[in-house]
Length: 216
Image 1 (cartoon, rainbow, N blue to C red):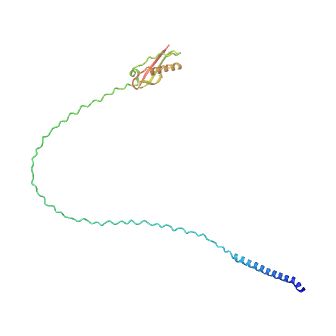
Image 2: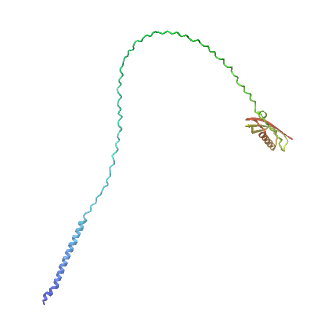
Image 3: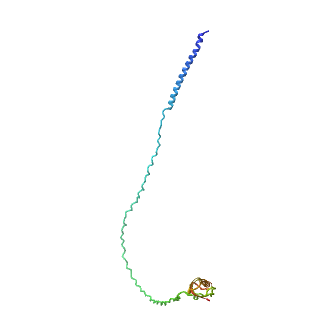
């Protein structure tokens, strides 16, 4: 048996392991260094640029074109017309013709006499003061005695306004005093009803009439 070969076996494996370990360490160191350099190369410096916004310049002002001048052609120069002298022929003396005319006889026209002036109709004189009922009314009813608790005499003057032949309104004026108020109201009502119901006066008028009451 070879004991020397058996003793060298384990040491040989140890040496191989050491060599492999050294190679692994070297490879790792190389790999880590190269990776770092690759990252630094990839990163590189970061450049920052400020982009300015382009501002459009304002449009140029519009040009105002003045209107074209009014060019009118000057009037043509005045040229006076040529003067022509025309000589008229001498007049020819025609023989005079004598005519004898007889004047017609004059007619004498006599003017008709002016008509006599027509006298204007004389207007009928208007009666002084208001009319009486008998002058304008064709029918006048008789008034009855009032039934009042009063005795004595009462006199009233009535002014009546007639429209279309009928009494439209009246105004009553007492000419004697001392009449009881109740009796006076009854008398005035009787006068008004008599005038409006029984009087007929054609046309439009204003008349005056007196009414006398004697009550015992």
